Length: 345
Image 1 (spheres, rainbow, N blue to C red):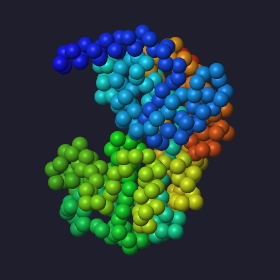
Image 2: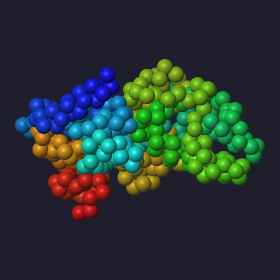
Image 3: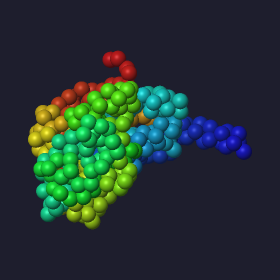
Image 4: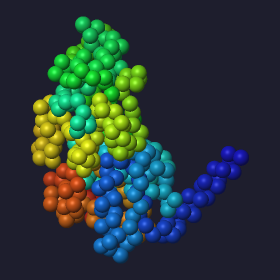
């Protein structure tokens, strides 16, 4: 049965690769952070060109890249949106499935913000150590690494509200989670002295860093596998809740959310563009080069997305919250030249 299935799958892939033109719209999936930007561009592309409006789905960066790497052909997506760079193991998975030429497009930058109910407790200023000590699985207490005993935010920082810790963070399939782990949890672990204590206890550097980014599982930190609307719903139903959001989502929900500073810096497009705000990251999409010239409008859509009129500092994406990439012209040329990852131009 498995042999027949394998032959059938190969046959379908072979037919799809030669009949990709049977599908006339670009298909996209991936990051929930990139989703609103891609949706804005897709709608404008459909309205302003002869091509159909691309289909844009969410699901998270990892899930989108997994679908992207399933193979070549009209039954596979053309573009994967991601709030992190593609990983080496994903590039290998793509290559193993025949997706050997990938174009990386950086569309701009976004900040990760920490927000709570507008009328809730006064969560107005955080440090990375606050988050690590609040939701880290094991933390430093009186010189020893122990299971996290903290129950209230005031336990980790007397300046924070004396309310139960209820943190809603991106699930592991989201690119936002990786940035949160590295720039908040790992940084907080290091700043608190916990990382050094782990190393002094004999842990390897890799094991210690992994431990720093491990999150408690007693219900005080909740992984959100959906998009930011699900995180917002959790905050709406829990007055003490604090959630992790993208800047653009927060800026479009300021009637419901208030944002805290991180390390004394408020998240704004200016502080993110300057690098002053410490928790920011580039946003990407990835193009399957084999589909260019086969799926109508694919290259045109990519060029349209990063045009100055859309992705520039005065464009609609910036108005929605995207921090424009100062190297946009380089990205535009890479698309025009169809430059793939690892290709020297």
